[in-house]
Image (cartoon, rainbow, N blue to C red; front, side, top):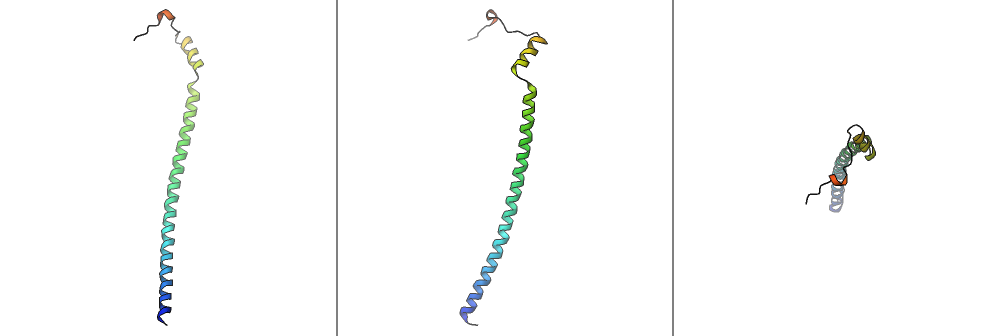
Length: 89
């Protein structure tokens, strides 16, 4: 084998080794990104559940009319008259 032929074979072997290392590194990166994706999906699912819980809580709290009705009915609360209001500066 000539010297040029040995050089070409050496280059091909080096290219194969580098290519193999690149495949291993890219597979590792792919796995890391997949784990990150799973972690983000889990966080998204938890946030979605929290959002739903907050929506239900908001619906259960009621609106202002319910609060006013309960305040005047059960608690016997009423709006103060203008002469009962004191403004402090």
